[in-house]
Length: 314
Length: 323
Image 1 (tube, each protein chain N blue to C red):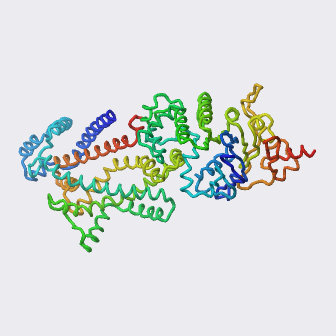
Image 2: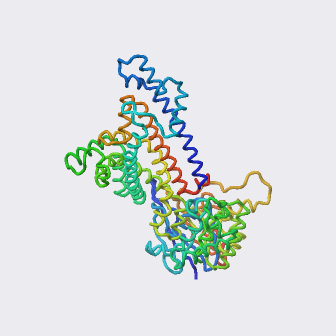
Image 3: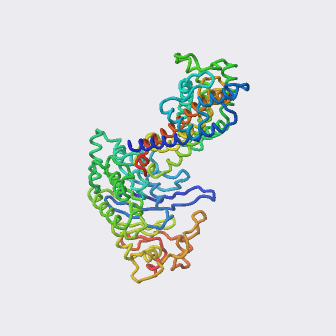
């Protein structure tokens, strides 16, 4: 198990290096440059050259990438073009908001989705199954920002149950949780439907396998068969999908953070892209990448814990 | 007294084409402590029969008529809870494909302990019992192997584990559904030997399903020959295999590679196909493919006595007597 985890983490490191390098190149291919943004149109060529030299923009691209990695390992992601604060400080200030939002969203939707999917599979073709099926497909089809807008209108403006904007007072857990409800509803809702469909399909497949018939032939209680024997196998694909789905979660978080004016990585990326704030763009995209790589790695490790065959590499 | 006594059992499956009559008026029994083999080609209703006995039938299956008496109780009249109490304690099963029999993500030990959930034993005692059973079926180093997962065992080992699990509760009836079909020939012999020894020790009745005539001859006391959902011949292995009374049994024996003495390039087959079980032909079910078909075959034959305890559903038997 330990060697599996080490191997998987090594792979994650390689993926991160490749992903960050290509991100670096992509960001540099965006038209517009930070120097003219900072200095304005009336800057003299000497002033521009001086700033380019200070930011390392005059060096060849490959050297810039090397420098970026070297600095990254020291925890130095450069300085914000406008405020001159360290980028790492700015990004790290925003990461927790996004991370909490994503984790809360995926957790509640996974729990509900797995429950609904299992129910549908066990009561196949019942009224409940059909209803769950229709609802699932409907919520899958609705994008997160639409849910954001309507939940804002209904629950925040009309009913006034939940606050409309912000992330709540720092340090006040209850208030922060209260602010989290609508955004996490917006992000998680389509996942409930998605996971429910996925779990239903894999549950039906597992329940038709020979070992389930064996368990029944030994008179094991149906509850133990479903939850002890079948579910563990049926959620394997779901774990993988959630791990990979972190990318979609992050992009859903971007919309949601903007609609609800929540601080977070998504809002930071949008703001810094529109102002060509390269170091901040790189810093926040870097953290998104890290979250994505970490989540796929974690999904693989969870699967290996659930399924001994993966651990053994079979 | 018979452990299992099936009388006039009919089972059908509802299909889009209409009812598929998989079993029709099947009667057979397993006497206490005896091994009874069921033989027949694919689609003859062997699997439907066993799933009807333990009442784990496909959702579209329906019992039309008949009784499945187990130690005198009609299983078809039991409640689901009563059935569940019997499964794994009084009636055990060994399935065909050992690679699919066990849960792939739980250790063998855990699965063997789980099926003892009714016993009032400590975890350690349950584990010990599991260990003893594994040793009994010939798995070396059982204590360590209890911690392993099914994929760490070979097919033959997994089938031994399945047998160990089935016999752990010392059932009155063991149903083995082609337990050696997925294994190679040498393993087959080993498993059969082990099964025979264990059966001797426990004294349970065994219903052994196979399409391998050699295995049936080796292992069983009595044999039931099924064709297209009907029992066509029953009797002791000796009688049925040495003096088959039904043309189907005869044809089956002639097709068995083990019986062929002359060198040949093409193995013999029975010409024709199994009749359509949705639109059943009238009369004898085997008539279409039978070498000895004659006028009487337009009527459905009943089981006639061909010898002491030897019965077959063929008009030829009664005709021979009256002639």
